[in-house]
Length: 377
Ligand SMILES: *[C@@H]1O[C@H](CO)[C@@H](O)[C@H](O)[C@H]1NC(C)=O
Ligand SMILES: *[C@@H]1O[C@H](CO)[C@@H](O)[C@H](O)[C@H]1NC(C)=O
Ligand SMILES: *[C@@H]1O[C@H](CO)[C@@H](O)[C@H](O)[C@H]1NC(C)=O
Image (tube, rainbow, N blue to C red; front, side):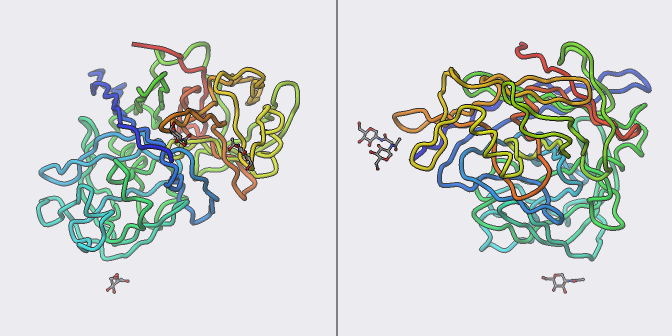
């Protein structure tokens, strides 16, 4: 059995650069890492159009602090580029729903800025779902105030998917095309405030040796201290998710896929790919098949580098970038940070995003990628 590790949080400071129109706002992200063999792997891609097949290896959550209402009620939320809706547990959820009861709950009656909506909602994720009704209120992120966000108050959380999560809710950072009909999702509403010159944000996630994880989202700008070289831009192939076409993927010298549609998803921990490519990747990478499971060496010897070709640029992942360690009581198991899905596209989650600094440019409908700094203070 794998043991639950203690969570170690890395809290980065919050600050706002006071530059009139080129204001940048940073939201620190804390991370919880807790591999649980008995748990379903959590993926937070909304599955109205996606159905993910999930595995049970690793669970990593990157979340930040937000508040909702007036006066502010505090929550921990995942900032999810893989969805566009925002939801929080409701104080009206039944006592029987432990997954809701164990988290901070939004109390509409205590908020002066609450506006009733009247519609119900239900959202399906990879291995669970939430449902409830829509409400409207003021959301605050760091020092930014965004009034009038329509969000979900959840009455029912599928269990056990959401019972052990550290985060209370999710803030979707996708476009309105994948959000609730006739609502303005967070990012668009945020940009309508004109706090920033450009409607874009950048994500820096870190994956440090040991258990120290963390990162930050920078709204309105790009933090040049968080990457090296140039930011390489590619147009979105479709607006909704942060989706683009990757030229090819190769393992060592062997190309395993080309012209693939990929989605950048901060709400998913690993890299997900179509199952046939997954099998090919495992073999090409050098994974051993032992009693049906694919283990790999924790030292990474005999393992191949994986190259992601994006436009003209090649991003190389060494074993140190993609090997995930799962500690048990007396031993450490290593696996590649990949999972198969029964879809035709890839989902690039935190394993990818801890190696690559990403820019999400809603104005120019493009994403930017750069080599993230590997170590910083
Ligand atoms: C919303 O859900 C509640 C409880 O499940 C139900 O009583 C109500 O009729 C629903 N409202 C709408 C507009 O569907
Ligand atoms: C694989 O199975 C064999 C036979 O059941 C067993 O002896 C061996 O210890 C197993 N290996 C691992 C790594 O579990
Ligand atoms: C851990 O060690 C104990 C005692 O040495 C042994 O009985 C147990 O089977 C081991 N567990 C695993 C998962 O290897």
